[in-house]
Length: 485
Image 1 (tube, rainbow, N blue to C red):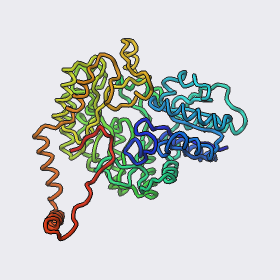
Image 2: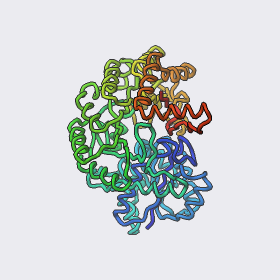
Image 3: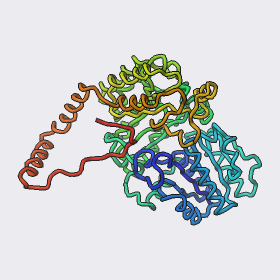
């Protein structure tokens, strides 16, 4: 019994896009976890990653060569079209191959996915146990009658560690030449770089996300033990000698006691590698001592969902923070030298142009290191999606438009020219902030006399012809909508 897993995440940068930033250089933890469980159960598993291929004909060729019995595909809403195209080719090449689709979109919209008769099964919610049991049943010749299978929430400490080699070994077949298991995305996190997930779910109630996440993972958060996470990091250190990492968790800092224990044990095990994680402004605001502890342990930056700079809008989306707390949280981050990656939305339902201006003015004050704007996108399974249906707001007519990129209006009643202006204006720094950043950059660059001397020699050689000097400017892979001073 051979299983091929397919990653169809080409909505961002398309085919032939390996190494191009986070959406084209990171693993799918869902598929990596499935692979680890299948291999532990004794099955042969490989991967086809569309990001590594040249196009659909190339996919057809590769699938013919792999010739699997079962094909598992993961699907977010934006992946609907490429997943369905892949399934169409799979069934043309090998009609008897059994196709299984899992992930957020089948969980939110199972009937839509099952409308395609070429989909043999869908797995709702978490798939490690249910998908592995399905493959066992197929191998035993006793396929389930129902096409809709309900996932079982596993004990996270009992799962094998994510199979990163599933991706790394496949990528190397197609020219991936980095030592890093995944592609670094900010200068604060040097290669070799990895991502890790410590828990699943979120206890908060933001209406642009909930209750969909509860459908996937159950209510609240299930977190791996600190010892289990430390064990995985030790394995990754031994195997890949990683130099930095990032927690993928929706909100790692929601469990204060877990974070404190992690920081203590991370340092005790001799780890010094810098890391990023996601947090919330209200948590940072109320737990400055925890922020200080994390910074001491190696935290270099937070992803923070500021979302809006207007209190009415923040209340409408049930964010649980305020403009004042957003700004105060940023000040705390600055106090401890932490990088700020600012996630925020423009064009939310009911939002006025004046309220958008409040978001812009907030960002001018916060002065984040990285800007990550999005035009609000109504995702199936969320309360705000239902609000849009009730008020006939949705403009998304094709799954490709579920991308978060701020390039098109996703709901009615918006002035798209104003939103485009607001997107650009939100990423312009005040003059005083530009000056501060220039001074900090210069200080960092020239505070070491040896570096200054080397730079002076290079400049002198360039002026006198005494040496080539210089070199190509550093360029990092990051989303095109992000800007960094």
